[in-house]
Image (cartoon, rainbow, N blue to C red; front, top):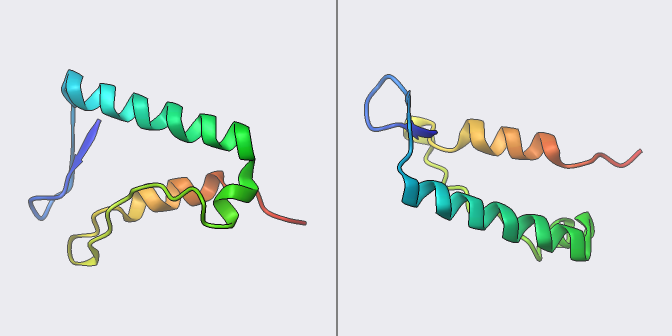
Length: 75
């Protein structure tokens, strides 16, 4: 799914095949990097997901929140 921020009401649209392939490639690369180096790579800034952020129209805020929820906490 693609989140469309181009209007005042944010909508979800089905993505095309090319977009789905790009997302799958990114997901696999991120997963492989995390398997090889663990979360420490991310914490040290060696793995940085590419999530655009534009506060004016809230682009990326929900995606960043979802990603941050995946990060394990230290106890």
